[in-house]
Image 1: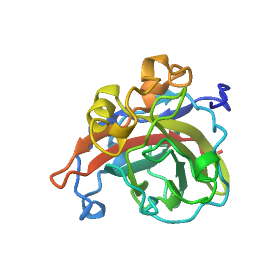
Image 2 (image 1 turned 60 degrees about the vertical axis):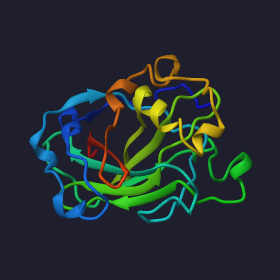
Image 3 (image 1 turned 135 degrees about the vertical axis):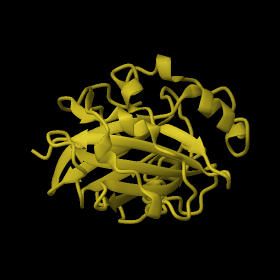
Image 4 (image 1 turned 60 degrees about the horizontal axis):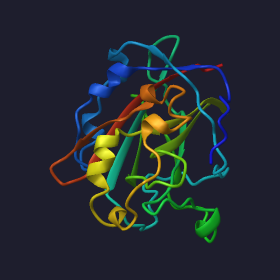
Length: 222
């Protein structure tokens, strides 16, 4: 179970970015939303947890062929002081696969790559990933870990969350349905209760059945 410490002081997030439109996998980059048009509010940093692996691959598709409901994660990074997009920030994510397993640990120890990857932000502050909807494991609600590196320094460490109602809908289908009765929902997760509500991603399902999750994170460069 993840360490419950808050690892550093609050960073900033722009909740207005949650209203972004869901897009298909094709053409996502051509129709990016300008992250600078929203207002800044505080969100807490959260623990890195025990499953981080340094030196992850620079890549967009992080599934390594593992099954699950297709998910496109769109993360916008902006400067908390100027409210402008940050270009060339490194967004580092990792999460459990549909079976609740992390690569590099336990049943996933034979691989150090599935559901892990790094992307650089573009001129609009956008880094995006192709992955699958995360699975659950004992003691934690559904989440994705994230680090943001700016200028070689860690500017943000946090976790991203999904609404329980959405997770319930996703989990009625294979491969998630093979593991019914998940043990922890958002309200009973001790880490989520420390600001997780403000780290919920906005999710839409596009016409091809892909879930598109979007969040905008304001960070401090120093």
